[in-house]
Image (cartoon, rainbow, N blue to C red):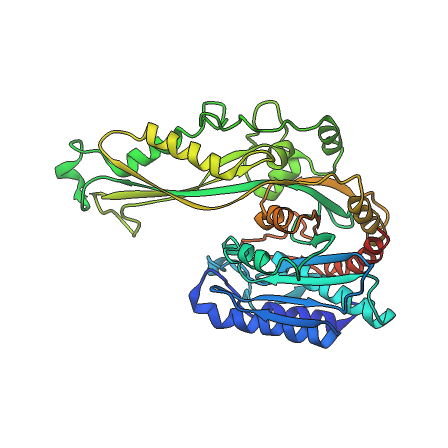
Amino acid sequence: MNNQSHLNDLFEFLRIPSISTDSAHRDDMQRCASWLAAKFTAIGLQPQIHQTPGHPIVTARNAHKTGRPTVLIYGHYDVQPVDPLNLWHSNPFEPKLENGIITARGATDNKGQILAHILGVQEYLAANGELPLNVIFLIEGEEEIGSPHLVPFLREHQRELACDIVAISDTGMLEPGKGTMTYGLRGIACLEITVSGPDKDLHSGIYGGAITNPLTAISRLIATLHDANGKVAISGFYDDVAELEQWEREAWAKLPMKDADILNLTGSPSLAPEKGYSALECTWGRPTAELNGIYGGYQGEGSKTVIPSAAHAKISFRLVPSQDPDNILSLAEQHLQKHCPPGVTLTVTKGHSGAAYRLDPNIGFGKAAQRALSLAFPGKDPALVREGGSIPIVADFKKILGVDTLLLGLALPDARIHSPNETFTVENFEGGIRLNQILLQELAKQ
Protein backbone atom coordinates (compact mmCIF):
# COMPACT_ATOMS: atom_id res chain seq x y z
CA MET A 1 0.00 0.00 0.00
CA ASN A 2 1.42 3.35 -1.02
CA ASN A 3 -0.13 5.04 2.01
CA GLN A 4 -0.01 2.85 5.13
CA SER A 5 -2.27 5.28 7.00
CA HIS A 6 -5.09 4.50 4.56
CA LEU A 7 -4.74 0.81 5.31
CA ASN A 8 -4.68 1.55 9.03
CA ASP A 9 -7.93 3.50 8.64
CA LEU A 10 -9.56 0.58 6.86
CA PHE A 11 -8.46 -1.88 9.52
CA GLU A 12 -9.84 0.33 12.30
CA PHE A 13 -13.13 0.58 10.43
CA LEU A 14 -13.29 -3.19 9.87
CA ARG A 15 -12.59 -4.01 13.52
CA ILE A 16 -15.94 -2.54 14.59
CA PRO A 17 -18.51 -5.40 14.52
CA SER A 18 -21.34 -3.31 13.08
CA ILE A 19 -23.89 -6.09 12.51
CA SER A 20 -27.17 -4.24 12.01
CA THR A 21 -29.51 -7.22 12.31
CA ASP A 22 -28.23 -8.24 15.78
CA SER A 23 -29.44 -6.11 18.70
CA ALA A 24 -26.43 -7.23 20.73
CA HIS A 25 -24.32 -4.96 18.47
CA ARG A 26 -26.39 -1.81 18.89
CA ASP A 27 -23.56 -0.05 20.76
CA ASP A 28 -21.14 -1.10 18.02
CA MET A 29 -23.40 0.56 15.46
CA GLN A 30 -23.24 3.83 17.41
CA ARG A 31 -19.47 3.46 17.74
CA CYS A 32 -19.10 2.93 14.00
CA ALA A 33 -21.16 6.03 13.21
CA SER A 34 -18.98 8.05 15.61
CA TRP A 35 -15.84 6.69 13.95
CA LEU A 36 -17.08 7.92 10.56
CA ALA A 37 -17.98 11.34 11.92
CA ALA A 38 -14.51 11.70 13.44
CA LYS A 39 -12.91 10.68 10.14
CA PHE A 40 -14.93 13.25 8.22
CA THR A 41 -13.94 15.95 10.68
CA ALA A 42 -10.28 14.99 10.38
CA ILE A 43 -10.28 15.42 6.59
CA GLY A 44 -12.05 18.79 6.70
CA LEU A 45 -15.70 17.95 6.04
CA GLN A 46 -18.66 18.88 8.23
CA PRO A 47 -20.29 15.70 9.59
CA GLN A 48 -23.57 15.10 11.37
CA ILE A 49 -24.89 11.97 13.08
CA HIS A 50 -28.64 11.60 12.65
CA GLN A 51 -30.33 9.26 15.13
CA THR A 52 -33.21 7.16 13.81
CA PRO A 53 -35.55 4.64 15.47
CA GLY A 54 -32.96 2.11 14.30
CA HIS A 55 -29.30 2.78 13.63
CA PRO A 56 -27.71 6.20 12.95
CA ILE A 57 -27.26 7.81 9.56
CA VAL A 58 -24.07 9.80 9.02
CA THR A 59 -23.89 12.73 6.61
CA ALA A 60 -20.96 15.01 5.77
CA ARG A 61 -20.39 17.81 3.31
CA ASN A 62 -17.86 20.34 2.14
CA ALA A 63 -18.54 24.08 1.94
CA HIS A 64 -21.06 24.25 -0.90
CA LYS A 65 -20.82 26.90 -3.59
CA THR A 66 -23.60 27.97 -5.90
CA GLY A 67 -23.21 27.24 -9.59
CA ARG A 68 -21.36 23.96 -9.08
CA PRO A 69 -22.83 20.48 -9.49
CA THR A 70 -23.48 18.44 -6.37
CA VAL A 71 -22.74 14.74 -6.01
CA LEU A 72 -24.17 12.64 -3.20
CA ILE A 73 -21.94 9.67 -2.33
CA TYR A 74 -23.86 6.87 -0.65
CA GLY A 75 -22.61 3.84 1.27
CA HIS A 76 -23.35 1.76 4.34
CA TYR A 77 -21.35 0.90 7.42
CA ASP A 78 -23.42 -2.06 8.60
CA VAL A 79 -22.32 -5.60 7.77
CA GLN A 80 -23.79 -9.06 7.54
CA PRO A 81 -23.62 -11.57 10.42
CA VAL A 82 -20.55 -13.80 10.38
CA ASP A 83 -22.29 -17.17 10.77
CA PRO A 84 -21.16 -19.86 10.35
CA LEU A 85 -18.14 -18.70 12.35
CA ASN A 86 -16.35 -22.05 12.13
CA LEU A 87 -15.87 -21.59 8.37
CA TRP A 88 -13.79 -18.43 8.78
CA HIS A 89 -10.03 -18.89 8.48
CA SER A 90 -9.41 -16.01 10.87
CA ASN A 91 -11.29 -13.68 13.20
CA PRO A 92 -13.83 -11.88 10.94
CA PHE A 93 -13.35 -8.63 12.87
CA GLU A 94 -9.56 -8.76 13.01
CA PRO A 95 -8.53 -7.93 9.43
CA LYS A 96 -5.90 -10.16 7.90
CA LEU A 97 -3.65 -9.01 5.04
CA GLU A 98 -1.96 -11.69 2.98
CA ASN A 99 -0.67 -11.52 -0.61
CA GLY A 100 -2.42 -8.22 -1.20
CA ILE A 101 -5.80 -9.53 -0.05
CA ILE A 102 -7.65 -8.24 3.02
CA THR A 103 -9.94 -10.73 4.74
CA ALA A 104 -12.61 -9.44 7.14
CA ARG A 105 -16.36 -9.06 7.40
CA GLY A 106 -17.33 -5.88 5.55
CA ALA A 107 -14.01 -5.68 3.67
CA THR A 108 -15.82 -5.29 0.33
CA ASP A 109 -19.43 -4.90 1.44
CA ASN A 110 -19.30 -2.00 2.02
CA LYS A 111 -16.63 -0.59 4.31
CA GLY A 112 -13.71 -0.93 1.93
CA GLN A 113 -15.62 0.62 -0.95
CA ILE A 114 -17.13 3.59 0.89
CA LEU A 115 -13.87 4.31 2.70
CA ALA A 116 -12.13 4.47 -0.69
CA HIS A 117 -14.48 7.34 -1.57
CA ILE A 118 -13.77 9.10 1.72
CA LEU A 119 -10.02 8.73 1.30
CA GLY A 120 -10.29 9.90 -2.30
CA VAL A 121 -11.78 13.14 -1.00
CA GLN A 122 -9.03 13.32 1.62
CA GLU A 123 -6.32 12.94 -1.03
CA TYR A 124 -7.95 15.49 -3.32
CA LEU A 125 -8.23 18.05 -0.54
CA ALA A 126 -4.65 17.47 0.52
CA ALA A 127 -3.41 18.07 -3.03
CA ASN A 128 -5.73 20.90 -4.10
CA GLY A 129 -7.08 22.60 -1.01
CA GLU A 130 -10.72 22.34 -2.07
CA LEU A 131 -13.00 20.03 -4.05
CA PRO A 132 -14.08 20.89 -7.61
CA LEU A 133 -17.78 20.44 -6.83
CA ASN A 134 -20.19 20.14 -3.92
CA VAL A 135 -20.08 16.79 -2.11
CA ILE A 136 -22.54 15.19 0.28
CA PHE A 137 -21.76 11.85 1.94
CA LEU A 138 -24.72 9.78 3.13
CA ILE A 139 -23.72 6.62 4.98
CA GLU A 140 -26.39 4.50 6.66
CA GLY A 141 -26.33 1.61 9.10
CA GLU A 142 -29.32 -0.43 7.93
CA GLU A 143 -28.65 -1.42 4.32
CA GLU A 144 -28.26 -5.08 5.22
CA ILE A 145 -31.74 -5.11 6.81
CA GLY A 146 -33.59 -3.31 4.03
CA SER A 147 -32.93 0.35 4.96
CA PRO A 148 -36.21 0.75 6.90
CA HIS A 149 -35.47 4.29 8.08
CA LEU A 150 -33.64 5.74 5.09
CA VAL A 151 -36.67 6.60 2.95
CA PRO A 152 -38.29 8.66 5.74
CA PHE A 153 -34.90 10.34 6.24
CA LEU A 154 -34.68 11.21 2.54
CA ARG A 155 -38.14 12.72 2.60
CA GLU A 156 -37.48 14.69 5.78
CA HIS A 157 -34.14 16.03 4.54
CA GLN A 158 -34.96 16.29 0.85
CA ARG A 159 -33.88 19.93 0.59
CA GLU A 160 -30.53 19.42 2.38
CA LEU A 161 -29.79 16.38 0.22
CA ALA A 162 -30.59 18.06 -3.10
CA CYS A 163 -28.01 16.96 -5.68
CA ASP A 164 -27.44 16.41 -9.38
CA ILE A 165 -26.22 12.82 -9.26
CA VAL A 166 -25.62 10.01 -6.77
CA ALA A 167 -22.47 7.85 -6.79
CA ILE A 168 -22.28 4.43 -5.16
CA SER A 169 -19.60 1.77 -5.00
CA ASP A 170 -21.50 -1.26 -3.74
CA THR A 171 -21.63 -3.39 -6.87
CA GLY A 172 -19.35 -5.70 -8.79
CA MET A 173 -16.24 -5.41 -10.96
CA LEU A 174 -15.91 -8.04 -13.67
CA GLU A 175 -12.21 -8.71 -13.24
CA PRO A 176 -9.11 -7.05 -11.78
CA GLY A 177 -8.18 -3.85 -13.59
CA LYS A 178 -11.41 -3.60 -15.61
CA GLY A 179 -13.49 -0.63 -14.53
CA THR A 180 -17.13 -1.61 -14.36
CA MET A 181 -20.24 0.54 -14.48
CA THR A 182 -23.49 -1.06 -13.40
CA TYR A 183 -26.37 0.73 -15.09
CA GLY A 184 -29.16 -1.55 -13.92
CA LEU A 185 -30.21 -3.37 -10.76
CA ARG A 186 -32.85 -5.97 -10.19
CA GLY A 187 -35.53 -5.15 -7.67
CA ILE A 188 -36.56 -7.37 -4.79
CA ALA A 189 -39.72 -8.51 -3.05
CA CYS A 190 -39.66 -10.85 -0.06
CA LEU A 191 -42.21 -12.87 1.84
CA GLU A 192 -42.44 -15.62 4.42
CA ILE A 193 -45.01 -18.38 4.58
CA THR A 194 -46.18 -20.61 7.41
CA VAL A 195 -48.10 -23.80 6.76
CA SER A 196 -49.93 -24.91 9.91
CA GLY A 197 -51.41 -28.32 10.67
CA PRO A 198 -52.10 -29.87 14.08
CA ASP A 199 -52.01 -27.66 17.17
CA LYS A 200 -48.92 -29.51 18.46
CA ASP A 201 -46.19 -31.86 17.23
CA LEU A 202 -47.55 -35.38 16.87
CA HIS A 203 -46.11 -38.90 17.05
CA SER A 204 -45.48 -39.86 13.42
CA GLY A 205 -46.26 -43.50 14.07
CA ILE A 206 -49.58 -42.98 15.78
CA TYR A 207 -50.84 -40.21 13.49
CA GLY A 208 -48.77 -40.61 10.31
CA GLY A 209 -51.01 -41.26 7.31
CA ALA A 210 -54.06 -39.85 9.04
CA ILE A 211 -53.30 -36.11 8.82
CA THR A 212 -51.46 -33.81 6.44
CA ASN A 213 -47.83 -33.24 7.35
CA PRO A 214 -47.07 -29.48 7.14
CA LEU A 215 -43.51 -30.15 5.94
CA THR A 216 -44.80 -32.27 3.08
CA ALA A 217 -47.46 -29.68 2.29
CA ILE A 218 -45.01 -26.78 2.19
CA SER A 219 -42.66 -28.77 -0.05
CA ARG A 220 -45.48 -29.38 -2.52
CA LEU A 221 -46.53 -25.74 -2.32
CA ILE A 222 -43.04 -24.43 -3.00
CA ALA A 223 -42.71 -26.79 -5.96
CA THR A 224 -45.63 -24.98 -7.67
CA LEU A 225 -43.60 -21.77 -7.99
CA HIS A 226 -41.81 -23.05 -11.11
CA ASP A 227 -42.82 -25.10 -14.12
CA ALA A 228 -40.91 -28.11 -15.44
CA ASN A 229 -38.50 -25.80 -17.33
CA GLY A 230 -37.67 -23.69 -14.28
CA LYS A 231 -39.77 -20.70 -15.35
CA VAL A 232 -41.79 -18.89 -12.66
CA ALA A 233 -45.33 -20.30 -12.77
CA ILE A 234 -47.15 -17.45 -11.01
CA SER A 235 -49.93 -16.13 -13.23
CA GLY A 236 -49.14 -12.59 -14.44
CA PHE A 237 -45.54 -12.68 -13.21
CA TYR A 238 -44.05 -11.81 -16.62
CA ASP A 239 -46.74 -9.37 -17.78
CA ASP A 240 -44.62 -6.24 -17.23
CA VAL A 241 -41.18 -7.69 -17.96
CA ALA A 242 -39.24 -5.60 -20.48
CA GLU A 243 -37.19 -7.62 -22.96
CA LEU A 244 -33.42 -7.13 -23.07
CA GLU A 245 -32.21 -4.75 -25.74
CA GLN A 246 -30.17 -6.20 -28.56
CA TRP A 247 -27.15 -3.99 -27.86
CA GLU A 248 -27.10 -5.30 -24.29
CA ARG A 249 -27.11 -8.94 -25.35
CA GLU A 250 -24.35 -8.30 -27.89
CA ALA A 251 -22.21 -6.34 -25.41
CA TRP A 252 -22.60 -8.90 -22.63
CA ALA A 253 -21.68 -11.75 -24.95
CA LYS A 254 -18.28 -10.08 -25.47
CA LEU A 255 -17.50 -9.66 -21.76
CA PRO A 256 -14.78 -11.78 -20.13
CA MET A 257 -17.28 -13.38 -17.73
CA LYS A 258 -18.34 -16.72 -19.24
CA ASP A 259 -20.46 -19.65 -18.11
CA ALA A 260 -17.36 -21.55 -17.02
CA ASP A 261 -16.37 -18.65 -14.78
CA ILE A 262 -19.78 -18.70 -13.09
CA LEU A 263 -19.46 -22.43 -12.48
CA ASN A 264 -16.00 -21.94 -11.02
CA LEU A 265 -17.08 -19.09 -8.75
CA THR A 266 -20.17 -20.84 -7.44
CA GLY A 267 -18.87 -24.37 -7.17
CA SER A 268 -22.12 -25.56 -8.71
CA PRO A 269 -22.02 -28.75 -10.82
CA SER A 270 -24.05 -27.16 -13.64
CA LEU A 271 -25.93 -24.08 -14.78
CA ALA A 272 -29.69 -23.88 -15.14
CA PRO A 273 -30.50 -20.70 -17.10
CA GLU A 274 -33.95 -19.89 -18.39
CA LYS A 275 -34.49 -21.32 -21.87
CA GLY A 276 -33.38 -18.86 -24.54
CA TYR A 277 -31.08 -16.85 -22.26
CA SER A 278 -27.46 -17.07 -21.16
CA ALA A 279 -26.55 -17.32 -17.50
CA LEU A 280 -25.44 -13.65 -17.46
CA GLU A 281 -28.67 -12.56 -19.12
CA CYS A 282 -30.65 -14.44 -16.50
CA THR A 283 -28.82 -12.98 -13.51
CA TRP A 284 -28.72 -9.42 -14.86
CA GLY A 285 -31.92 -9.03 -16.86
CA ARG A 286 -34.52 -11.68 -16.02
CA PRO A 287 -36.79 -12.01 -12.94
CA THR A 288 -36.65 -14.95 -10.54
CA ALA A 289 -38.37 -16.64 -7.62
CA GLU A 290 -36.00 -18.20 -5.08
CA LEU A 291 -36.48 -20.26 -1.94
CA ASN A 292 -34.10 -18.79 0.66
CA GLY A 293 -34.90 -21.02 3.61
CA ILE A 294 -37.22 -23.80 4.74
CA TYR A 295 -37.56 -25.10 8.26
CA GLY A 296 -39.79 -27.00 10.64
CA GLY A 297 -39.83 -30.15 12.73
CA TYR A 298 -36.87 -31.72 14.47
CA GLN A 299 -33.40 -30.43 13.51
CA GLY A 300 -31.20 -32.07 16.16
CA GLU A 301 -28.92 -35.08 16.06
CA GLY A 302 -30.43 -38.47 15.39
CA SER A 303 -34.12 -39.20 14.97
CA LYS A 304 -37.21 -37.75 16.56
CA THR A 305 -40.23 -39.17 14.80
CA VAL A 306 -42.71 -36.33 14.82
CA ILE A 307 -45.17 -34.67 12.50
CA PRO A 308 -44.46 -30.98 13.12
CA SER A 309 -47.31 -28.63 13.89
CA ALA A 310 -46.01 -26.09 11.35
CA ALA A 311 -43.47 -25.53 8.59
CA HIS A 312 -41.99 -22.27 7.37
CA ALA A 313 -40.27 -20.91 4.27
CA LYS A 314 -38.66 -17.66 3.16
CA ILE A 315 -39.02 -16.65 -0.49
CA SER A 316 -37.57 -13.75 -2.46
CA PHE A 317 -38.28 -12.48 -5.95
CA ARG A 318 -35.68 -10.60 -8.00
CA LEU A 319 -37.42 -8.21 -10.36
CA VAL A 320 -36.55 -6.28 -13.51
CA PRO A 321 -37.55 -2.75 -14.59
CA SER A 322 -41.32 -2.19 -14.95
CA GLN A 323 -42.20 -4.95 -12.48
CA ASP A 324 -43.93 -3.51 -9.41
CA PRO A 325 -42.84 -5.23 -6.15
CA ASP A 326 -46.22 -4.77 -4.45
CA ASN A 327 -48.02 -6.27 -7.44
CA ILE A 328 -45.64 -9.23 -7.53
CA LEU A 329 -46.18 -9.92 -3.83
CA SER A 330 -49.95 -9.83 -4.36
CA LEU A 331 -49.71 -12.21 -7.32
CA ALA A 332 -47.47 -14.52 -5.30
CA GLU A 333 -49.89 -14.57 -2.37
CA GLN A 334 -52.79 -15.38 -4.67
CA HIS A 335 -50.78 -18.20 -6.24
CA LEU A 336 -49.77 -19.67 -2.89
CA GLN A 337 -53.29 -19.53 -1.47
CA LYS A 338 -54.66 -21.14 -4.63
CA HIS A 339 -52.17 -24.02 -4.54
CA CYS A 340 -52.06 -24.64 -0.80
CA PRO A 341 -52.73 -28.37 -0.23
CA PRO A 342 -55.82 -29.38 1.75
CA GLY A 343 -55.47 -30.30 5.41
CA VAL A 344 -53.32 -27.27 6.37
CA THR A 345 -53.73 -23.50 6.63
CA LEU A 346 -51.43 -20.95 5.03
CA THR A 347 -50.25 -17.63 6.44
CA VAL A 348 -48.35 -15.22 4.16
CA THR A 349 -46.27 -12.39 5.66
CA LYS A 350 -44.94 -9.82 3.21
CA GLY A 351 -41.40 -8.57 3.82
CA HIS A 352 -39.24 -5.76 2.46
CA SER A 353 -39.20 -4.82 -1.20
CA GLY A 354 -37.58 -2.41 -3.63
CA ALA A 355 -38.02 -1.53 -7.28
CA ALA A 356 -35.57 -2.31 -10.06
CA TYR A 357 -33.48 0.47 -11.60
CA ARG A 358 -31.99 1.26 -14.98
CA LEU A 359 -29.95 4.23 -16.24
CA ASP A 360 -28.97 5.09 -19.80
CA PRO A 361 -25.16 4.81 -19.47
CA ASN A 362 -24.37 6.57 -22.72
CA ILE A 363 -25.47 10.11 -21.91
CA GLY A 364 -24.61 12.88 -19.42
CA PHE A 365 -23.17 11.76 -16.10
CA GLY A 366 -23.01 8.20 -17.44
CA LYS A 367 -20.40 9.23 -19.98
CA ALA A 368 -18.50 11.15 -17.29
CA ALA A 369 -18.40 8.01 -15.15
CA GLN A 370 -17.08 5.96 -18.06
CA ARG A 371 -14.28 8.49 -18.61
CA ALA A 372 -13.38 8.30 -14.92
CA LEU A 373 -13.26 4.51 -15.04
CA SER A 374 -11.05 4.59 -18.14
CA LEU A 375 -8.58 6.91 -16.44
CA ALA A 376 -8.62 5.15 -13.07
CA PHE A 377 -8.23 1.67 -14.60
CA PRO A 378 -6.28 2.25 -17.83
CA GLY A 379 -5.62 -0.41 -20.43
CA LYS A 380 -9.09 -1.96 -20.54
CA ASP A 381 -12.33 -0.47 -21.78
CA PRO A 382 -14.93 -0.10 -19.02
CA ALA A 383 -17.59 -2.79 -18.89
CA LEU A 384 -21.26 -1.78 -18.96
CA VAL A 385 -23.29 -4.32 -17.02
CA ARG A 386 -26.42 -4.83 -15.02
CA GLU A 387 -26.38 -6.37 -11.54
CA GLY A 388 -28.42 -9.33 -10.37
CA GLY A 389 -28.58 -8.03 -6.83
CA SER A 390 -30.69 -5.22 -5.44
CA ILE A 391 -29.98 -1.84 -3.89
CA PRO A 392 -33.57 -0.67 -3.25
CA ILE A 393 -32.45 2.78 -2.16
CA VAL A 394 -31.32 3.57 -5.72
CA ALA A 395 -34.95 3.61 -6.90
CA ASP A 396 -35.81 5.74 -3.86
CA PHE A 397 -33.11 8.26 -4.78
CA LYS A 398 -34.76 8.58 -8.18
CA LYS A 399 -38.27 8.86 -6.73
CA ILE A 400 -37.54 11.23 -3.83
CA LEU A 401 -34.50 13.25 -4.91
CA GLY A 402 -35.25 13.03 -8.63
CA VAL A 403 -31.72 12.03 -9.64
CA ASP A 404 -29.96 9.09 -11.23
CA THR A 405 -27.24 6.97 -9.67
CA LEU A 406 -23.82 5.94 -10.93
CA LEU A 407 -22.90 2.46 -9.70
CA LEU A 408 -19.13 2.06 -9.88
CA GLY A 409 -18.31 -1.23 -8.22
CA LEU A 410 -15.03 -2.42 -6.79
CA ALA A 411 -16.18 -5.90 -5.66
CA LEU A 412 -14.48 -8.75 -7.51
CA PRO A 413 -16.53 -11.85 -8.31
CA ASP A 414 -14.63 -13.93 -5.73
CA ALA A 415 -14.93 -11.38 -2.88
CA ARG A 416 -17.24 -13.74 -0.94
CA ILE A 417 -19.56 -10.97 0.21
CA HIS A 418 -22.18 -12.22 2.71
CA SER A 419 -20.11 -15.39 3.10
CA PRO A 420 -17.30 -16.49 5.41
CA ASN A 421 -13.83 -15.15 4.51
CA GLU A 422 -15.02 -12.01 2.74
CA THR A 423 -12.15 -10.26 0.94
CA PHE A 424 -11.08 -6.99 -0.65
CA THR A 425 -7.88 -6.56 -2.60
CA VAL A 426 -5.46 -3.77 -1.77
CA GLU A 427 -5.29 -3.14 -5.52
CA ASN A 428 -9.01 -2.36 -5.65
CA PHE A 429 -8.85 -0.30 -2.46
CA GLU A 430 -6.16 1.87 -4.03
CA GLY A 431 -8.05 1.90 -7.33
CA GLY A 432 -11.18 3.12 -5.57
CA ILE A 433 -9.29 6.00 -3.94
CA ARG A 434 -7.87 6.92 -7.34
CA LEU A 435 -11.26 6.55 -9.06
CA ASN A 436 -13.00 8.87 -6.63
CA GLN A 437 -10.54 11.70 -7.24
CA ILE A 438 -10.90 11.41 -11.00
CA LEU A 439 -14.69 11.03 -10.75
CA LEU A 440 -14.99 14.32 -8.85
CA GLN A 441 -13.13 16.09 -11.66
CA GLU A 442 -15.18 14.50 -14.43
CA LEU A 443 -18.50 15.19 -12.74
CA ALA A 444 -17.47 18.81 -12.15
CA LYS A 445 -17.21 19.26 -15.93
CA GLN A 446 -20.86 18.39 -16.53
